[in-house]
Image (cartoon, rainbow, N blue to C red):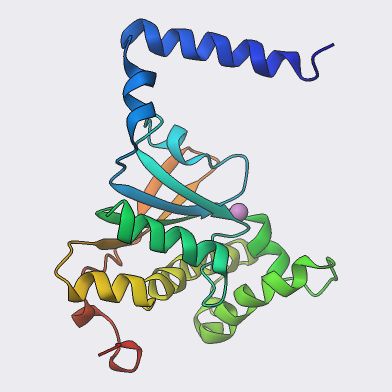
Length: 209
Ligand code: CO
């Protein structure tokens, strides 16, 4: 008995459909991956990177975690950034958050959620940095929405402050870091207009000479 048989059936159908439009698709992919984009997004099942921008396997290098957080000491995320920037030489890093993010909502609560509370502390930090602005929002929903946006903006900064990204800029490698947000309820992606393309765009104290 094959467990989760429908997964394997779906996969066969999916592969056959792609092969029908491009018979060499998988053999070409097997030779190498050359994505131009690194996507750092939320693990939420409703925000699958490739699907929402209609891209095929091979086009986006993806890292996802709860609430799309880029932590200075997270070897997992830092390794993904290093590989994407130094080996794949991606041209764009996209931090993509989403409204109605469970991680963001949990971070604004006072209840205990177990181990994950340690991860959510990073989002509570984002709230602390922007408390005045968030508390000035007219409703609880708007407070949450703004924290979702500000969390993306903070994580864009965290990406830009890594040694990997700064070294890429120093060596003249073209690399843009973007902050986007997706709304689950309408399927639409929005640009938060915080695109950062060089060391001149980051605060002096964060620059590594
Ligand atoms: Co989320």
